[in-house]
Image 1: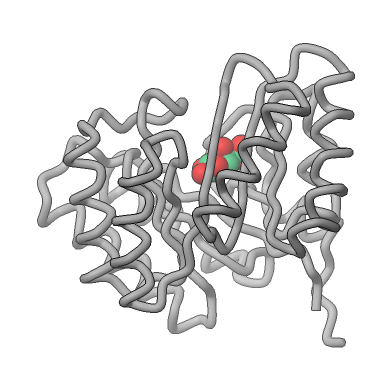
Image 2: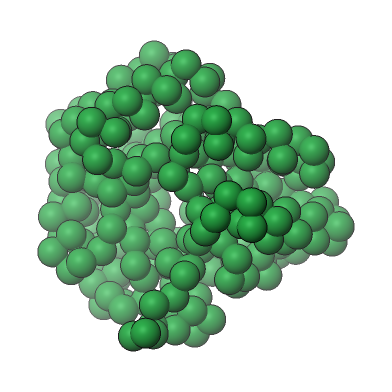
Length: 238
Ligand SMILES: O=C1C[C@@](O)(C(=O)O)C[C@@H](O)[C@@H]1O
């Protein structure tokens, strides 16, 4: 078994676009382990249409033995989501109550109390909590990233993930070394991404527990097609 799981991100903006991604993913079924549904991608749809898409993805890929992450990326973290904090909390809690997912992505900067309240609902439904932080402009300092992990640890996340935009090679190297160190400290639960062309190599490193790739179109700068990722992380039976 590989320690790094490949996550395919579905970033379609409506049912047709998601259906295309589903179809392509079914044709590449061995190239990924987990499906990430980006709920902010189809934020413009009404509640029932939103639920139908999520259910469709879950039903299709759970039957194939894949795990599911639900993510709603807010605009403040580089996503398309325009929900208020109150709406964000209600959406994530509702998804945990209704949907058979494995992980819920919670943006840690939303506020500790809100993270705790969403986590309570996730725990009740045996859903793992993936605490995330993104910055599409810069990379935080070593001290800031360490403080971020400390917060994620205090909040008892199952996975700690950050994705930063590098401005220099040093930013990329800082991310790589922090992921290694944090893995030693917290265990195999760290995902550290340096975005863009400059940071691409971080998506091929084995220290991260997940690596995110695309099937139809990239959901973040520097994302790699899942078939390329599978070459780096071949399926092993041991
Ligand atoms: O957090 C991540 C990682 C990501 O931002 C990336 O850089 O591949 C893509 C997002 O869909 C996902 O939620």
